[in-house]
Length: 152
Image (cartoon, rainbow, N blue to C red; front, side):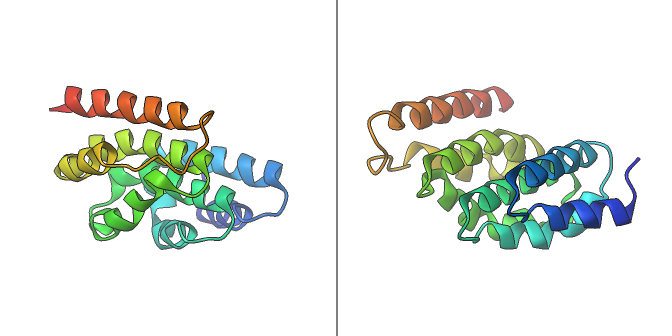
């Protein structure tokens, strides 16, 4: 089991300029999020990360919000879902793809948000992405919409 000091250190490392360090911290926090609500205490930090200029930091924030949806009894995700859904069409297609994939987990834990998530995915304007990236984002959206339909 991870302790509070370890979580705090890992959360700080999420913004490390060394992407390997930050990615290792992310992996550890994702794993810890599946075991207890210890990481959830940093949800406000993850929400702030969604607005970061660095797309890697945004992606980490989006991922950890989704991983902690199961612990969100305070309804923080409901309050920021519109901002979260804006990242379905993030300026960086890699961030958009990770956001889309994470939405399946959000919907599983927050079924009351499924309709809003589905609507955002169906109406996502992917025209800004290059011809090489657009089909990948579209495929992710289709996969998540299929998952959402199976949750009903």
